[in-house]
Image 1 (cartoon, rainbow, N blue to C red):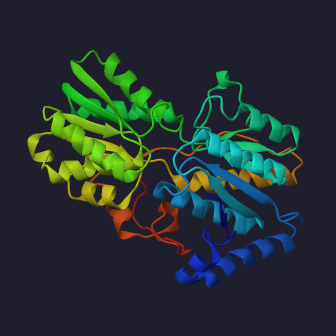
Image 2 (image 1 turned 135 degrees about the vertical axis):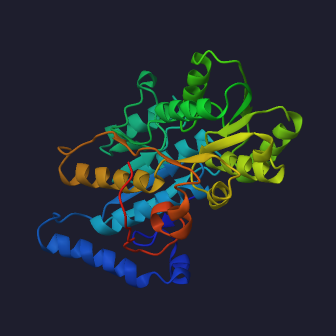
Image 3 (image 1 turned 45 degrees about the vertical axis):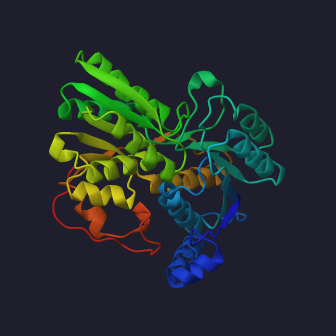
Length: 354
């Protein structure tokens, strides 16, 4: 379950050659070297940053891994991608223990469990290894001593989704879907959405549906739910795979024509395509590239400053993507959204919408 990431390319060397990315990666490394030569970056060891993830093969994190690779190239570091394929906390803890034993320079971990990571985080800090949370964070009351969190404000994101649901579904049955209930990368979102819907005072019947950790099972669970609840007025998910499942079900069963609404999170290609066709109302972009890039940035600056710079929590934000705004996501293939391995300067035109 451990995959070495080439610091410049975000993939193993065989994959790098397939992608033909040698030139762009060399340019990134050259930029880092130029910065060091100009005295903008201090001379330092080639730091090794270990990223512990809960779903290492999930396509959502493709953009995160590109962000890690790009930041490592700029800062002259290397990274390692490891953890669990199926959100098994014990496997993630084992990966953290290996990182501590091998004297990683810094560790980043998705804190998807409120208590499982408290001990390895404490031991890493005692060994002088800074630990940062990304994508998922443990609540303050959990006692976890991670230095900072880089990712979306998850409960607020759920609340904003709930407010969007209020504009789409005035009353009736609503399905709220979550891949792995209780996991801290998504549970706060469903809590936020449910909070808004219940406080609205409207006549909603809310079904909370668990779908699983892999995209295939998520899609099948969504379709099974609809077939068993054809009076549903809206289906909304708090994770990427399930959102894709809702989009497919909406298209397959012609649900928009029946007045059913749907939405969710993340930027899987099928989700974006079906938004453009009107089969899904919205998805929410949590900017996964930044969750990798900013984490490396904090790790590096913490180390070279002797701990004087940072650490600081960073909210990577929220963007609603609808039929009106999905165009650039479909017409542009970039590392920033995980749809291309090519390093490029993406040109844009026209006014900037907030």
